[in-house]
Image (tube, rainbow, N blue to C red; front, top):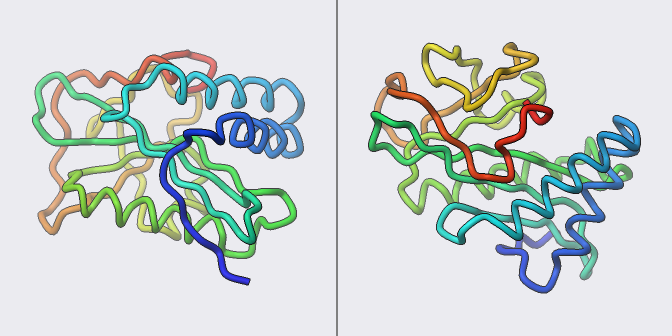
Length: 181
């Protein structure tokens, strides 16, 4: 069996939302499942195409995992920055490399599209396996107050040495909710 990567969400919105709701309910409880399901629904419904990447891992037609990358703008910086959030892999397929392969696929696509930097907010032990490193808010200000600053991570997607991102950051509408941070 071979895992394929697909781009976009058209015609698969309900299946993608269900994946995130189920995965986060299983790991964090029903409240978190509903919150992340609503986030995914909002990302797909309200984010302009040029500000959103969606990549899915599929095996024999079955959705195994999905990631979202949305634009993060900095007031005083021209670099193109995206945030990786959220990420979900079917519970039974976690710890099999599907998530890391999916993230690497997404990062390769961002590089090909000449995106400069990517951030994420999550477990450093997991995301550092795909090249993310701890960053401070002095390096890249989060759009909202971080409840777990030790989970603020980033990586340069270009060959140049990363320099701090300048200015106040602004995320897409669906992510602009304090309870997500």
